[in-house]
Image 1 (tube, rainbow, N blue to C red):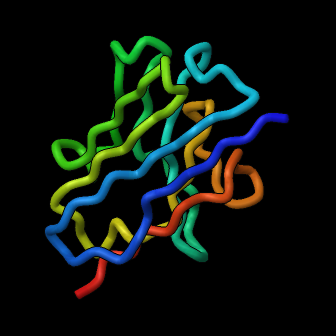
Image 2: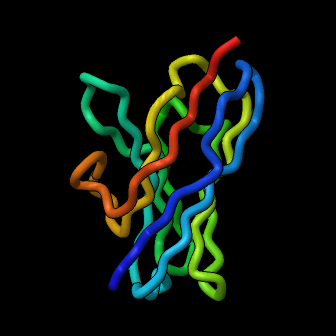
Length: 119
């Protein structure tokens, strides 16, 4: 069975940092591009960051450029999203998926992990 498990989400103050982790099982993540998407209730799912199979190529949503960094460890079958200088508008459920298409909620491969930025 294929499973993707996201973790690391929590409550953090504005300006703070957080690292989200994504672990795959039953699926060799090194064979696929990976991406993080996020969704706020009643808003559309949006792609946050993506990374190619080798990690040589990354892309980011404009609002997170220079604040978020996506990386991967193919040996560990994991993908990480390092977030810094977090803002209120980063509050969302974050999903890790083996596709650059935004996938959230029921269409996400995992259960997601909640990030809440609040003072």
